[in-house]
Image (cartoon, rainbow, N blue to C red; front, side, top):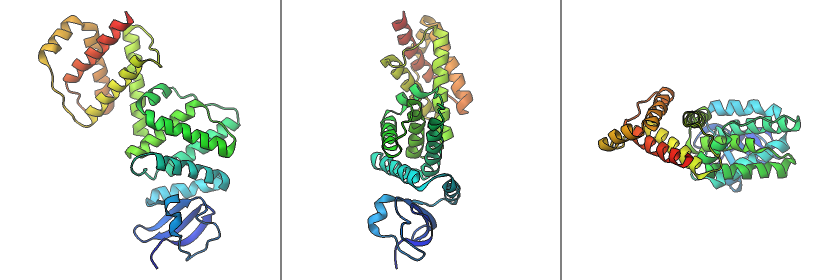
Length: 280
């Protein structure tokens, strides 16, 4: 009989099963294991409410989490991931089941013990990933409704990175690295131009996005035209901003391990000059 056949029920929300396309898998979903036994076929009406872990590594890691999580909490987290899945385009990288479950368990535990983890990259995260941040806020609301525990704003930033990582199919460490790089570049700009940016301002938002788009172009090996005459003019007229732009580029090259085209210095100088004019 075609379908997903249960091999072993691990708890009410998790079962090991044989999938017709993927072979042995771990199936996650609210109630997928409830009142079921070996050989049962999961009904089709559960299909849009469950997730299949195909990777053996993710299967093993998820099973390791099971002893540390009660089924009610697990069902709440499954519901949040289902909500994320319904809100984002395309499919989520299956690592989110391990990564976000693990993170939420620790976050809820920290709050219950009166500990709050500071998120130094929160403003950069909000600016870089506004859509994922809105979805992360919804996740916090669902968790509060289900558990009665409210998570602080800093946690929304961490959850945002988990969501973005799963959407773009990149390792969380890589996504984190770019947020930290942008934060480092903004700090250097503030030091060199001797001012503190209003993190709620449009100027801050534009700067962060400009830096992120520059990083994206570098990673994609995307070349932009270099206006030679403008480059010469900027170097002569705005030496502080021009030199700062090159400092930023050297930091990007060191962090990304990729060359940055000279034209990026021109556009960065122009952006920095506009910013410096507003400060004055």
